[in-house]
Length: 531
View (spheres, helix red, strand yellow):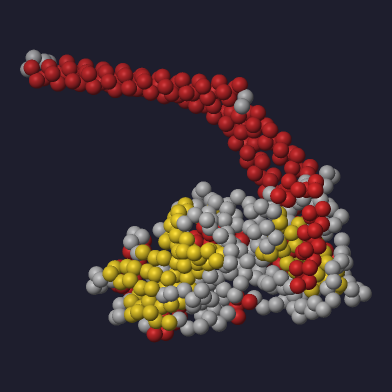
């Protein structure tokens, strides 16, 4: 499992601290290890089809007891239907072994699924559903006829009363007889429906019981499985996934926890007396549906599954500080202001509103100067450009209504990594949060509508300068619409979430136009991009 470097690594300085796995620049040793893993993957032609679909791989550079350098490799999930491949470290717990309790219980749950499917498609179920449908149709028509007869009887009695030739007592008795007969018929109809409904309900109850049993056994199996994942750390401490996730907001580990590359690598290193030096994970293959993944690109560890686990496993290592905590953005420039509003040129790296990282925000800057200031809209931390701030509540409410009604006109300038051949167009890809990899967004049919219009402004050196007109304002909308295969298919330069990192994200909010909430004047502002 421990591989020696076959390429020359002489002259590469060892890392001073272990990689902070949730935001990092790959160390040169990790890049060298990844290139060797990638070469190995290319040699395994029998995996070609599966790898084409895309998978996350990881490398961990280590030092052994003889002070020799080497690296470990791992994949997330399983590969070719197995957790066991000689080139890669083993799973923390291999649930795919034929004799494992997981496979046995999984077979029992699969048997329950078959029983449910058999009951749903059985002749008894078909007959019961058909009988209920026929009875419902008959009863609905019968109720309509009863209602019609009652209406006819009432109309006839009203006609007699209008002609003046009637015996009121006789008419009352006739009405009572008709109502009594109608009630008797309705009771008979209700009994017919109850018989048909009960016949189907008896069969459905068997299915519901099986579903409940399946749910209970699945939950128990999952928890028992999580108990088998006993994760080590550099201090020699061992905790299972249930213990690790208990203090978190979700409390219960998500499915697939402990099966990502990073935990596998650290677990193997600790168990075999290897000293972890640096780590990186990369995507190999096509981007999965809905997500944005670039072939061969390095990515941080996931937040949903790995953050609690790695929080435990990294204890005892000297880990790099989170680089996002050390950002000190420059102060914003005031573009325009009056007694009600102020528009600033927000620098890249500054938050729009206060965040947990402690990085300075435009909200803090504004409230230091205008105590009642409120942020009307937001820009991503990495995005620069025009940000409008209300100086008081009334201005905030009035201007926010314009953003909600989409009457505010905005345009952004961006530099894309590739060439866009069509001069203009529009993108409609609904977006929602990727919970496992927040703050990443993903394209999903059940996401919120996201609409972007674009115009290409020029192409040079293989890159495209483009202007975006966002009709909606979803989180990371322009970044995903640029990078996703169903959008423009090429990320914005410097996009460290959906592309590759650079000095900064080349996305700038350049123009904005809105109606002044007090004077009614049209305010048009511009802040030229510096790229």
